[in-house]
Length: 218
Image 1 (cartoon, one colour):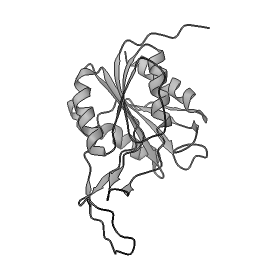
Image 2 (cartoon, helix red, strand yellow; image 1 turned 60 degrees about the vertical axis):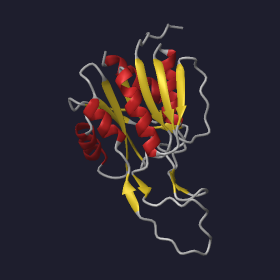
Image 3 (cartoon, helix red, strand yellow; image 1 turned 90 degrees about the vertical axis):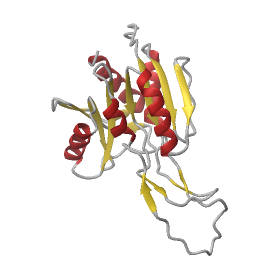
């Protein structure tokens, strides 16, 4: 078997959802399992990268010794860790499905079942945008876009706005792609406008495609 190329980089990866507490037992979240981000972490670690994996609440484990895992729950916690870690890194891959909003009021006690409730939300910090502002010349930044309509237009706009080097687009309209699946179907959009479309494949194989693209940035 051909030996994999050594990727001597320190890379930050975010994975999974964030949970935004309403009360001690309820939260706002999404269906992300973290499988894509964890697959990327394992693939890059196998290629020699020192990976710092910032994981939201997921039921996954890591196996490679090159992966340092930091578990968080909320978007604010993930943001705080990323802002602390990013200056030490050669780059970051932001695959987490971070909640856009969090409740203004977080109740200390469980809300009773029959109690009427209106939840006011406020925006969470935009981790990608904050890292994009801080990105140095020799650092890279990769983002993800999960879209339901106007996929390429929305992803291209996100790439430019958040200073990504490339963005990985997948659509909920594609069968077998998105949250919960062991497979994914993605397109990689580069800053120069080049678009590479991939067929449906395992998330481990998608991770290899993304890792190959990272190596091209060297």
